[in-house]
Image (cartoon, rainbow, N blue to C red):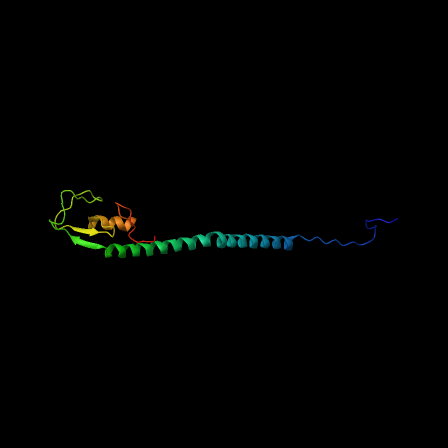
Length: 139
């Protein structure tokens, strides 16, 4: 008779191993995979966005600097009483009439405004409030 069980009188040694080594290996592999996935996510998703944001911020700073230069290069004039009919002319930004000896800025489109009014307007918007002419062409 052949039996799969040891027969009486035969010495059998059994060795029991806990799966600790294999279990640690799986934990390390899982942790490594999670870290690698997180790093890949940051590189793929976040980095291009940050680069684009920085690029837009630099571009906005350059535009603001160009706009400031363009505004300061526009013609300034001190009003004289005989220049035009002061009673009919008003600054469309503040809606006040022009008075003699006030400083006005004349835009490239030839519209006239108080310097104090139009400088702030142009630095925020970059266009003439009457005709929408862009102070910096090509933008």
